Length: 388
Image (cartoon, rainbow, N blue to C red):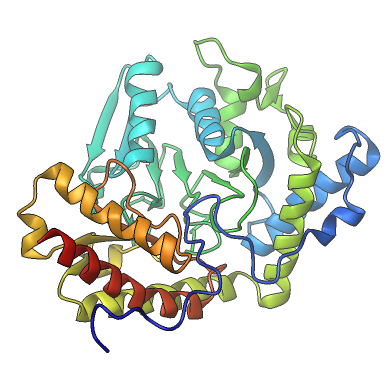
């Protein structure tokens, strides 16, 4: 085929956004027929819906029985900040970040919270910082999978089993796609809209017994917003972890997430989701390995994300462009494919190196990625012919 000839097959579903990500295959709004719409979240049926969501989350994510799970406001961001504001302070704190959202936790720790003993471990997009600096006697805040950098921690070996500090893990783009070692993570947060295709604004927080002990033994010296409070009279507010949310959740969104959790369970559960993401990533990586003008933004194989797969354009002609030219070149390809084959929202994050970010979680059918790849080649050749 002539490299400038359009491919003949388009993705059936070209929504490759990292969040909100596409709905599960076969999704319909039929669940609305029995959804608890127009009912109070404090009513018996409202509480039942929220408790069912918590119980299903525990089952599908294989969360230990002694860990608490709650639905919280403001998506994953609210969940992470709830943990930071509530727990940090009694020990020194290490914050590790290598992409935009991890850097937000640095900002919170460095300029918002008056932490007296703070260390920052940072790295550029596509790289991990030196996590061996963490010794376990301090608290740790880190992102398991860098949504905008395409880099994940390969394992939790850097966290000592006998640690004294607590670990706060932003796992929003790792949950349902990568193995989370619950014995090493004291706080795990995520949102519904990443690897589960849920609607925005709802966050999840999971606490280990060590995290609960910190909440009950430590009172922060700064004012605490109501939406961050997880204790009552010095004890964990158990009602929160039974579905009595701090603010009003959307029961429509909650029932949508319940349907997705049931779908994952029916398909084969957590391992099935992991395997799907791994297969999608492998397809993308194999294509990058044989395509001379594109590379994975992450150079170390075991650190590459299998959800937000980030790519950089490395063609010498592209590299010769200035920063605005490189950004315009990559954006033109994304725009062209949106118009021509219905592939949307796969451009790099705005502060990351210009290129692509293709969401590859278990919700994505492999056939859609297979159909996308010839279009990426066609798009590159078409824009290159116009540019160089």
